[in-house]
Amino acid sequence: MIHILSDVQTTLIGKNTNIWQFCVVLSGAAVGDDCNINAHCFIENDVRIGNRVTVKSGVYLWDGTIIEDDVFIGPNVTFSNDKYPRSKQYPGQFYGATVKKGASIGAGAVILPGIVIGENAMIGAGAVVTKDVAANTVVAGVPARLLISK
Image (cartoon, rainbow, N blue to C red; front, side, top):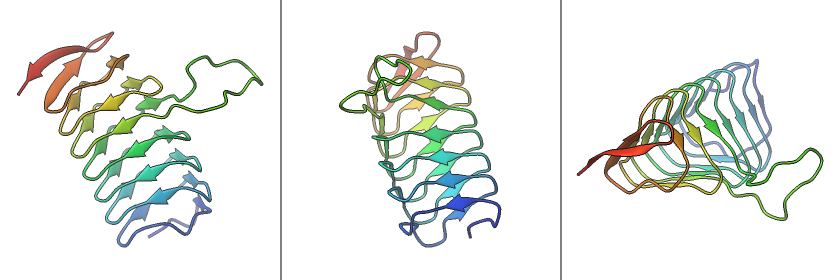
């Protein structure tokens, strides 16, 4: 289901995926099966989203971002992909985040460019993730620090 009030330009949308109102999905993006993209989201061209992913409202996924299967992205999570942003000066390469299978990111977290979040990791709400997060760990805080390692 693609809501009539969304602008979805890609044809690469999986089965049983819902895209709610006021979303923009650019033509090069790919979204897997059984995903739920909530209202007010933006998905740029060079973005890959796996299967059974939930993207809550207010999330923007920029070029270079890879979201694997079974990931949860909470409301208003902020991703970035430019390590040295300047107005009207574009990098030769964008460094999107990679979120591995089964990871969860709490509301309002900030994910810096090029970060890899490991399988089944959990990012606490409001965390600022400045370095890679290992699989099966829980991080929280500003900057994000290890709380639990399984």
